[in-house]
Length: 298
Image 1 (cartoon, rainbow, N blue to C red):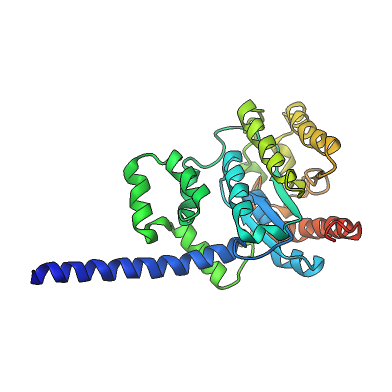
Image 2: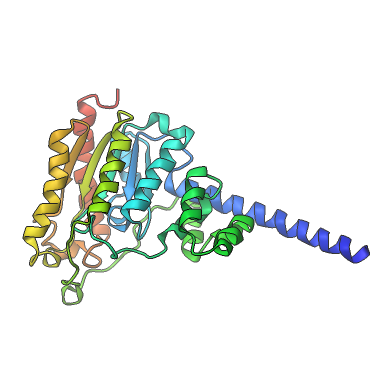
């Protein structure tokens, strides 16, 4: 009985510490992605959009609150669930515009992270995310170990994001300039029908709430698509076609000269460095302020 009490006390301490540490990390994560605030603007995308937009500069120069929910390697399906998650939060009632990151490879498959559902382990207390993780988990053990032990939900990258949230640090650390000789010119542009369907469903989910969607095509190095211009145009036609058929959708295209041909703006073939981020953020701010002048936020 004496040893049993010690074991139970030890387990109690472990679970309390696990709960408290995970709670602090979750607070940082929510703060980093803006999931604990009322925002007028929500950014949804992967690392392209993440590194293309300076959240603090955008907020300061538009006077609007921004939730920057961008994750490295997320797929179109992931982004659909991310949108559902945000719209399920009590903070979504102030949302006026969703800036959704798009690019030449939006409808391609197999180009982003495998098992990207693991990025959302910290949000297992959210019903939508919990169901998504359970459906995609590689095994029951993989699901339940993270469900029970909350600190196990945090990889090094997620701990870093939590720390940045606690420190209010949204800086772009991708310093340096691309070596064009190392750029991947073989990445194929395709339009996967299922991915396209999920993408359109995501847009419909947002506009059904009367929220404006801005499809933001951030720059990539021009040589990545120079041999696939016809395929790229087909992708662009999808984006521009949606904007023409729905007044709640706009398509902002920054993937063209002088941006795509100025290699000093890029960290690598698809990611902007701080110099590129500053330029594209200023262009986006100008567009947002034009929308603001049209009283979209009234």
